[in-house]
Picture 1 (cartoon, each protein chain N blue to C red):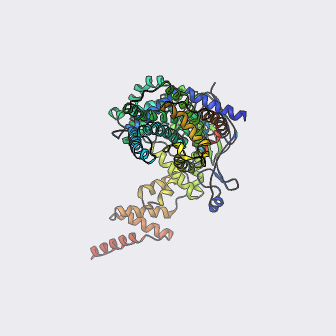
Picture 2 (picture 1 turned 120 degrees about the vertical axis):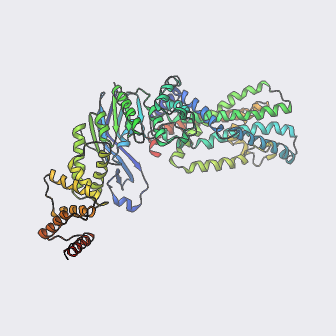
Picture 3 (picture 1 turned 90 degrees about the horizontal axis):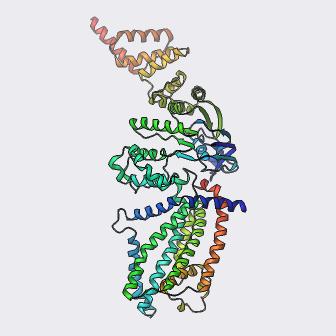
Length: 264
Length: 365
């Protein structure tokens, strides 16, 4: 076990030493999405914007809730959910996509994960434009609670790290994993209070929320944007998941690190 | 001090095997297929000590394990059993340039690939201009790599990979697709780089390249080291072995001899007579009546002190007659050969002879 942790730590160490590379790589990947399209990653933002606009008007009518309030909730909810979901779904293919590098030189595998997270964070930053628009239109002034975004996003990224690492390993071994995860995340989108307010659920299915780790991750990233502090239990969930998940996935990584190149 | 040590290193890949594949066992090319453990043994218990100052050339047929061994030396594959100790900074020049992205421009790729190969942003920026100049790609550097030709891609990859100053330099083929001018330039650069590196390991089919770059040769066969020694000796032994295998009449071995001879001839290297002979036998399966090949074959037989069958002489004369059907001297020689050895002649030659006879008898009247 201690050998596994040492292997994982050495890999992390090498990744941090090569931060120049993955920071640059993340930028390049985002810039590349602008190439050969007029809007680049903003297409994604535009798509999200259209979705928010539609949901904001139609679903607030369905749920009979105040449209302005719904807009204020749905916008950060969708943006943060998109961040979490894309970290997880796109995270699966990280090692597979790195084949030419991994088979050419000895390379820290966790650097591929860092590049992936950094890229997701940059794309998330694009989406914040939507939030600014909503704030401006509704005349919302952000309060100091907004600062909680920093620990919130950090915890999302730490959890995103271990999830991506574990899923990348699994996908490399069995390529089906990516399909399973993509379909799972789509289902999770409807099982988690993303579009609908949690109060509408009622007590019978309350476990869907209380024991839904994705929901707690969503809350710690989203609530600060709405101007309220995320509940304590969500912090505990996110922190606990980070601690357990990080340990497990680093142990797994350390155990299989020397086999990864064989799985291409 | 840079040093590489392998002890009983084995590399094997798990595969799904169909029953008939499993029964096939070992092929002419490739590693050993182990049916019991369902894996392909690419490297089989390699023990190797490469001290600083070594210049090693890897030789072997396709799938003998050259590339796999290079990847073990690069630290990409850790052996599934045995040990690999590698001390020193490593640069590799393999088929793919790590980090290359086809939608980025050449200039951007110089930065990203340089970073992938282990340079810091500062270092790669400092070298970017020199790398760009070496590629001679000019305006293409500002266009996406997607539109590059294979040769242009090779120039870019080569220039980036050779801008490093590694302790250990590992090269797999490398100079495949460049045009002649660039190949010369690339070889010079590689030689300079090899001189500065502490350890050089090159896998190549080009005997000339191995001869200029390396001092020690290693022959791999089905994942095992079968010979090791001074490069000159190893290369000539290897050529002799290929020729000897071919002379047993084995089709695949003869094919290998043909390929090797072609390579040697294409790169202007000396062809050992025995190898050329075997290659010609293979070539005759494609063009059985090529006069210059037949003549060369005959002179090689004489050179090697082997008997020349009258049938071969007849073949040569017949091929000559096809080119110059009027030559009465050739006709005479054919008739003599036929009479002396009781040989039969080809139908088209028979037709030529009959025609000629009719002409002669017609003229007499």
